[in-house]
Length: 458
Ligand SMILES: Nc1nc2c(ncn2[C@@H]2O[C@H](COP(=O)(O)OP(=O)(O)OP(=O)(O)O)[C@@H](O)[C@H]2O)c(=O)[nH]1
Ligand SMILES: [Mg+2]
Image (cartoon, rainbow, N blue to C red; front, side, top):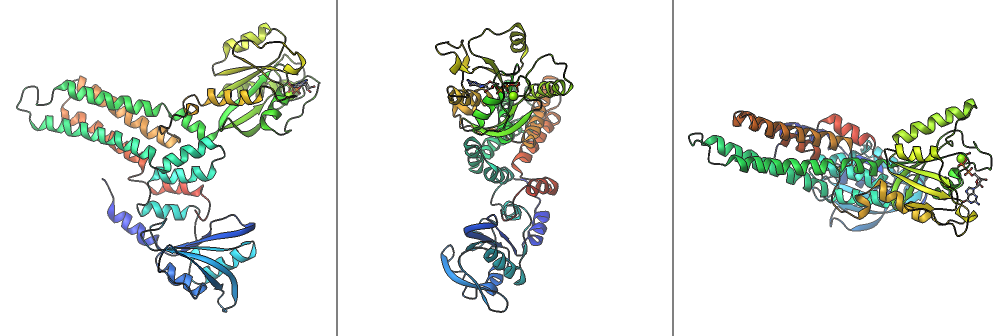
């Protein structure tokens, strides 16, 4: 494994001062959790909790916290963790105080007076990474787990935290390393005419790696959508019941609903969890030729949203045939479309067509079915309960794209009869790109960018 030891060592020294932060949100609550980490953190804590003992580790103890004047602040429960067996890999103390605004803040202030400094966002996790407690993918997964709003996001983040993606990329890296070894063995015995390794064997192994890379890369679209939410846009003619459906899907009266066609004049976006998956649901202005300037602008916005959509919910009232314009719209759609027959409570007995969903915002009929259908089309693979890891960030996609390109160049170089050692430089580059994803070598700016979005105290 490649490590830049002197650099890391220097970082470790610099980053081992004692930090402290509130790990729970401030406000009225039963309890609050403070976290302290770093070399000498037990001494710092002892100045605030005079009865503090570090051993036995991982045992919760009740004690009194005091300020510098020795005045009692709060009765707390603390747990000591000894390096390296802690979240950060350093000596750590977790302190549960009573909740609210005052108690935790006063204990924290006392810790600062006692020698701790305030932790930067994500600094605990950053230290965990720097002490080899987790890799970059796991640090990202930690942030994703905290930010998850939909169950599917949580499942994916948890799997990534369990090194699911790390293992998959590690296996790819091992395969490229194996290929590299095969090529260098071949180079080491040049006296044999065709070399000791049959060329088909190298070509076959190289194609296998390439295919696995391409398969993983293909998960990026859905994976990134899982982190960001799929853009589902509701479209249809004015008065089709789009805003009523939008409200029904959200379970909240967000958009104005009236019997006047042209009610919605701007796009309204709201986050929603549908069928366990995250969405950005958009209600739009009804599509029609309009002479009203504001309405025309609204329709323009609708078209822009439709251009960016991951899925379209196309509304038309139940019990009538689709117009030519509507058919043309559906024919031109380049993203998955669900055709929804709205207001089905007004036409009882009327059957919706094939692959159409009849809904009523009034009675709630069809809404659950629509939610599931949306999850199914926007997350075709993940909604089938496929437990395989997926790429969830642009960063992953870019690095795997580089690795794939290097594999292609390796194959092309072999085909062109280019010398083995030269062709093999592409394998080296592919290995480095894969190591980038896991974060075996990580530059400070990558870490700065990741951790700046973290909460303080994580
Ligand atoms: N009975 C019944 N009426 C509905 C239903 N959904 C919508 N409506 C009525 O249909 C009319 C239009 O609903 P909207 O949701 O405002 O329609 P829209 O497609 O958003 O219209 P624009 O914003 O003008 O494009 C309103 O009078 C609603 O009360 C439904 O499921 N059942
Ligand atoms: Mg509307």
